[in-house]
Amino acid sequence: MSERGRTRISWHFTEDTVFSPGFWYRDWGDPVNEAIITLTQAVSMADTPMWCIHEHGLVLRRIVVAAESLLDDLDQALSHDFDEPRPVAADSPLAGTVLAAYRSLHHAYILLVDALVECRKGRLERDLRAQRDEAADLCLVMADAYNTTLHLRRRLPDEI
Image 1 (tube, rainbow, N blue to C red):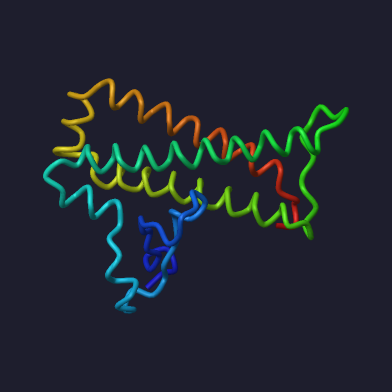
Image 2 (cartoon, one colour; image 1 turned 45 degrees about the vertical axis):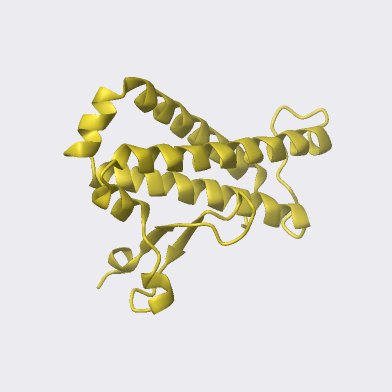
């Protein structure tokens, strides 16, 4: 089986930080990992798939807000007389924080994209078309998430 085919994307919290919601699991047979439901599975099995998407959008928004606060702090601390934001030092504790924010936001975004792609036909598509305000909010939070991901990446050193 290819590496891509074995990758499992899951949706859960492991601690009380907004930088931990998205994780990749590669051990399909591990009972601990098998007990975790993916967002795609939740959307495909739910009576109200739009509720799952809405809830995940709220999580994504929380991560974006926390990451934007981190970026604001970095801008105040590190951006003096530079047009481009400077990356944090690779050996700095900040590098780990920025990397955790980047990975969390990226994973949460990919979870949502995966669910939308895999479940786009049927109830979810019908609900997205019927609930246009909710679909517009989802579109905007996805745009914010992608934009914030790019800004976080610019703060990471090339060697990370």
